[in-house]
Length: 329
Image (tube, rainbow, N blue to C red; front, side):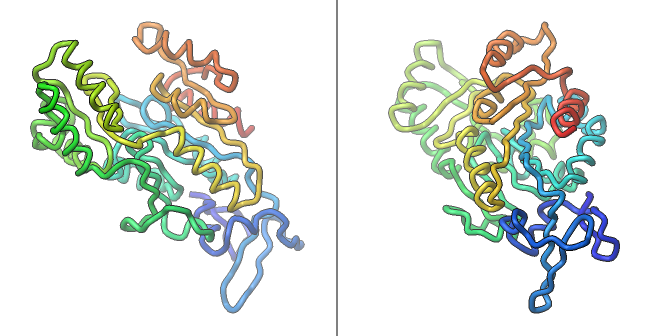
């Protein structure tokens, strides 16, 4: 991805790489020299870069499914022009997904993505090591990342799911009950993808194996009383506590504004009606078009009546590419 070449002064990196040498707060008000793109200051053998002219004023949040990534092929090829432009302009791209950290790591490697990301519908917020030179409140080290865990730990979530199911007399089958093969059979995933999907930290997908509508309503009410959230998405239900994508994007936006001392404009791009929950927390948001035959189309149409949400030109990476170029152009 693009960054700043010390030999030529040309941009060839990304904000994460630039910011590892200094705090993003140095971007605004940094000393200006004759260099076209950056000021280089030597302090006790450490090089600090100030991308004065390229200081970004936008922060982009994006969904994966139906937006940056084609839901059928998993490809982002049609979005590469916009991705390159974001890198050239040093604009941070924050991924927002219902997937697990293990699921999106292969995609992040392909994207050369070195920015924060939000997993499991707001359960976890992950910051690459050294991304900010400011303290991140509530963050703890988790492998190569600093992590803010909004969601309750997965083990406790699974225990509560089983307890509430027994108390309300319903049968449930969660991912923690299934092998990767069984998950693959129930979802159509490949075995390897099912293994990654099963590597969960906050949110448990499940389905009811024996329950009528009154029993399901009983289960949902009992979960709510104990502080757990349930939501129906496609063929699965989801069970969690504290997973909130809107709160997650607000937290990330505030951290960026504090670190850069810039009133960054938060812009979100969603791919389906489920993204409306966090798109409403943006300064401006775009919901990419859904086909009229899509069952979510009417729900999405109602969502874009919100003050800050507009309709994109096309679904998937094609629409995403056009939206990004229009935003930053």
